[in-house]
Amino acid sequence: MADTGGVTTALAACGAASCLYGAGAVLQAVGARRGGGGRGVRGLTAIVRQVPYLGGLACDLAAWLLAMYAVQHLPLFAVQTTLASSVAVTAVLAWLFLHTPLVRRDALAIVGAMAGLVLVGVAAGPAPGDHGGLATRTFLVATVPTALVLGMLAVRRGHAVVAGSVSGLLFSLGATTVRTLHLDSAASLFRQPTAYAVLAYFGAGLVVHARALEHGRIGPVTAALWSTEVLVGAVAGTALFGDRPRDGGLLLAVAGMLLTLGATLALALSAGATGAWTPAHRPR
Image (cartoon, rainbow, N blue to C red; front, side):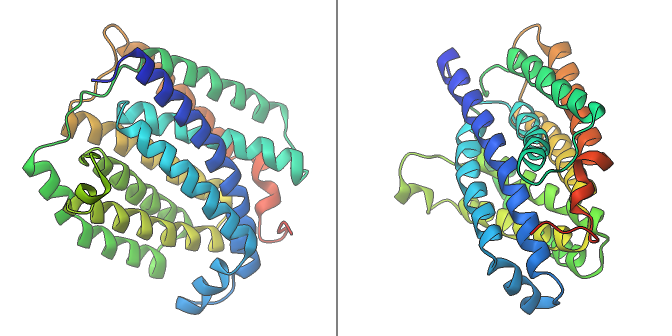
């Protein structure tokens, strides 16, 4: 188990990752809109050629590394809830740099998200130290083909909000799979089948998320993504690894998760916070 210092460091890593994810969401949405319009591989190529989208991916990569560190030291519910607060960061950055209106309700939701994070931080203890047994690792690897097919269907036929939920599922499965890894050395890492499952889940999640942003409003897509990530992460961490809050922290954890998730959904669906991202008013 991680000690108190390890928990504090992991929570700080989560907070930094949340800020980076918030900035990345703004940059990726700009790039997806600028490069959107095409279909299939050509459409995706047009998106990833956009400098803002590449900058967003760089933010995501840095955030992902920090979050994966946190996953090894904190319960999944604490990590996913903290990362969900990136929506508040996105709202603030859009207000500062894109002149998106930030109404009173949005400001209250941001305060609510921060308050929820304080509760989660107080309730979070160290991760159990369980990397999962053979059955858990086999399940997560065997689920990859089904998850990839689901992602493909979401890209081809799904509504943007459905695609947002599927991308959240893929990212959450990736984070869950990271917990199974033994990070003794780079050589040992690449000998673990679950390491390749992590790459598959996150790679597919990025593709599905890009398509969702191209064809839908950032608010509903982001709400679908994070609500799925928080719920799946909490269930998976509890069922597969025995994640628990620290002693006496269950009510605080539940209250913090609900407060943060509610504030996140309110922000993501707010006309004030997301109005600048509608197709009729694309940021440039």
